[in-house]
Image (cartoon, rainbow, N blue to C red; front, side, top):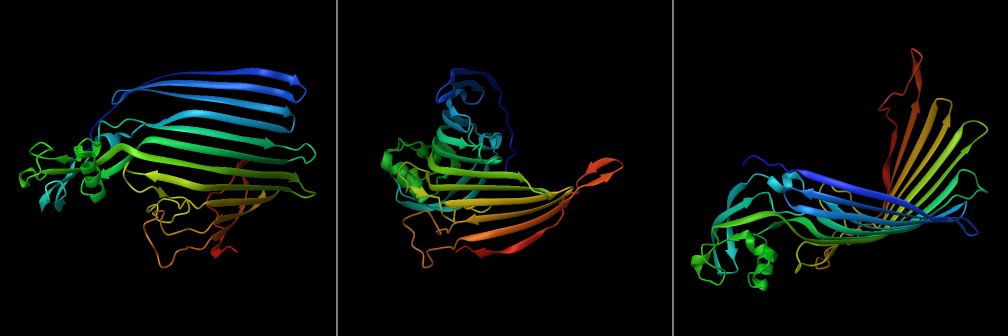
Length: 343
């Protein structure tokens, strides 16, 4: 494999502003507008513009509403742009020429990648009731749509071949097949001499959901007590690697990929902490709802459900003074209870 070598320069300029629209009125303690704009110029892909528009509304002391709309980006990494080429030989059946044989397959970076773009909308509120000191409750709805998402595309994939053939040679994936003759030639002489696997700006991703947060802190006759509950409900995480490919819903699917957390539709974490002097006892309870084996609707499994489960972690920490300086040991082992099925 060839060494990865490349660089890019980035220039940025940004502007932010916040404008109070209303203040000190009945049912309008505060109404503020916030905006931001950023200009970014990448030497590899050129300029992009990102922005954010937001409103916060406080009808009275205990309640805040918030809404934001933004255009966000993720620029390709240097590795995605300039990864060195790795070449191997593989058997390949070519739909275009109806010919089978052996050809070279190259995996490499793509210096023509452009930043992904996402449109993000969030709406929510925070309630901190004055009649229950230490309590707060927040709810936020989000919707994210990513266009031109970066995804690896392999020319030796049958669906990629079909996408090229269906387009009549106009699809971006057709550039993954290096042929000695024009696309219009379907004879065996036009069998590909090289097939490329690389990242392309071709995938589409969208998701929406609701986040909940409940927090409470109070002083007890002896010590303090903190509780925090975080819950996310994400019914959809739709992705499509090719315009002609099957739409996959990864929400609640276990087969998203090795090393990637399973995006259960309901994820919840409860932290309970009791502190007294320099001693703290913490219990963390994590819940993940049941999972289906795959988000691909064309696949059928005998065992169609992976049960929901709960993790329980217990930790104890103790602060010490060493030569008059506070010191908290790291990595104190706690008790890890086995995962169990949630009912």
